Image (tube, rainbow, N blue to C red; front, side, top):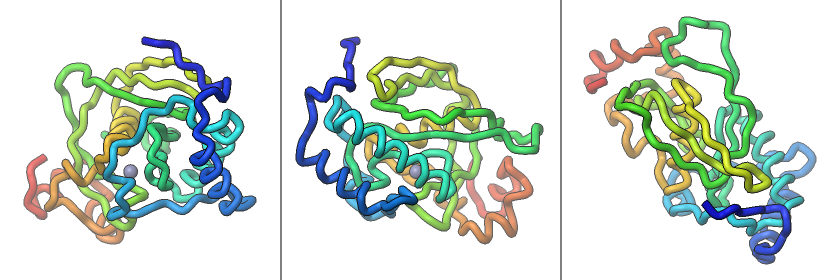
Length: 221
Ligand SMILES: [Zn+2]
């Protein structure tokens, strides 16, 4: 793989950089960026590979704002198209909850910027759980995903990383990476599992493996 360094500001797209700076200025001190909702074309277009289109400092500020926006939402991942920017990167972060027996296998996923991410399944094991998206507010649906993946990405300096992810962190990585090819989780979710957040809390939240939801709403796990 060609070594791409983002740090030298040689490939800056001046116009795009100015647009991002303007969005950051509008985000104000709280650094909260508006999250676009389904129906916005940018969510459906493949993102352009990141090759240093933004100045190093602009990228750093943008990532910080995306981090703040994700935490405030709250969410565990946010892809650039979700803030209206068609570049191939996302931020992710999740932490252990109280329940060690949670079948979703939630685990520590330290804050990371994943640039030009890619994944390949390891083995053929899948898991089906409810998931949601900050760009499809108020709803969740059951989505089958690979349980184990080899995740590859670049960091802010262009350095390449590769890691085996399992369980919930693997799901988050797949969800965010899919955003960058214009996919949203609902595209391959079980349509009949779709539930409002309110009804998820009311009926299905106590049973993370959605066996009963599958039975009562009528979908395959
Ligand atoms: Zn999403």
